[in-house]
Image 1: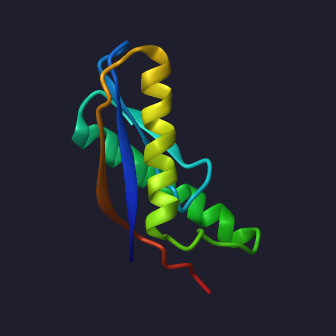
Image 2: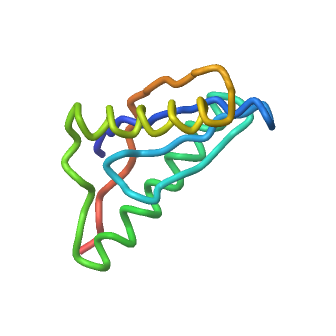
Image 3: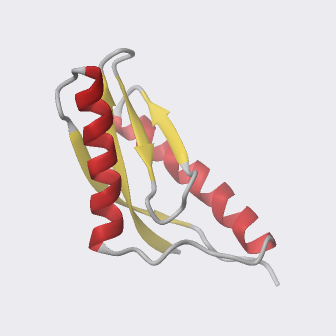
Length: 100
C-alpha cells in the first residue's frame, strides 16, 4: 500500500469535484461529494498503477513542486471560467501490490 497526494478542484457547473493525482499523469476522476471523489480517484489510481506495472513504468516521484504545479493548473482553470478558486489536497492510500 502506498500513499499519494491528490488535488480536488471544485466545479460549480455541476456542483462536484474533479480530482487528479499529480504522480500519476492521466489519473483523473470526479464525484459530487468529497468522499465520492476520493473513492473514485482511488479506483482510477489502482487501475493506473496496474497498467503502469504491466508496461514497465511507475508513478512520478512526488515532490512539492509536482503537487504545486497541479494545484496551479486547477486554479488557472477555475480562474479562466470565472469560478471561485476552491482547491484542496488530500492524501490517499491505494493497494499497489502486484502479483508475481
